[in-house]
Length: 114
Image 1 (cartoon, helix red, strand yellow):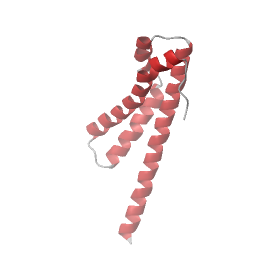
Image 2: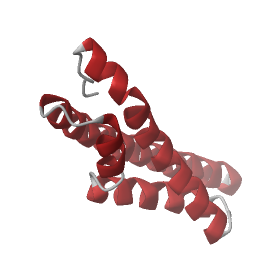
Image 3: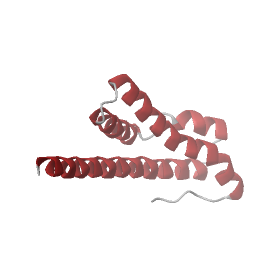
């Protein structure tokens, strides 16, 4: 019975951290949607956008990294590996916007929020 309760608790905790990570990813992504749209409206060059995007939405990015890092540590990952993985995940979200910026600019389209 204790084993069952332990598994149920861990599953619930895991589901909560996954939901937290997804919420944090959506918040970061939506912030980048707004940032990208403003830069497209201002006709910012691709290189200037890529440089500026690395500093955009710092609060949302840091929150995403913190949530993912916490989740990874809960699975007994070393702190340095958890931090590296979390940063890579945030970088992947950012890359989607920096990589797609020229396409949005040339097609006069905009990213949409989730």
